[in-house]
Amino acid sequence: SMQHLKLGEAHHGPVTALVLRGEDVHAAIHGRIRTYDATTGKLHRTRTLLPCRVHGLACKDDGALLAWGVDAVGVARGDAVTTVTTETRCVAAAFASSEEVATLTSAGTVERRDAATLVRRGATADLKTSGELRCGALRVAGELVKACGGDAFGRIIVDGVGRDEAHGGVITSVAWAGDDVLSTSDDRRVTRWRINGDALEKVWTAAGHAAR
Image (cartoon, rainbow, N blue to C red):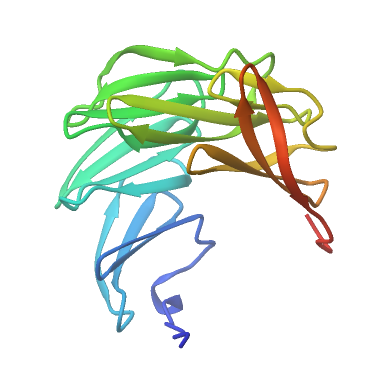
């Protein structure tokens, strides 16, 4: 059965990111993260992680919380919060290990950062995008961090393999589905992609949405 929780009492603005871990719901509004009980909707705590709007959230099993926005990345462990600004727009982030955080920049670079201080340790991969990524996603597979992203011209790149005119509009989101990638666009389509050698092949496309 579906349960509706009223969390609006604590919010004065749009919720821009959401993640569920165990019995905690973490919801982002502006640069603040509010944590609620997943069963009752009761507000537990509020922490400020970023100086800008939060675009994405991720959690670790030990309770660490990662947030990223246009020009900042923040990590919280309990009440301890570390935040750094980024030189290039961040489109995705993930916990790569207990010691590292990975971030994907709009230029297509995957950067490794210290999980405690968020100091940049170096770059490990490049999507070789011909333009600025509008969205992206990271997938941690053992020691590897795989990346995918999409730009404003309908081009999608998965682990270095790109495809022009994958969509007839701006790529609005991408997400990993195992080794495949799902993408959405303002062309009102959802598409599943699969790498086959050095080509990115379309598995299926769903259309018919009334709005982007």
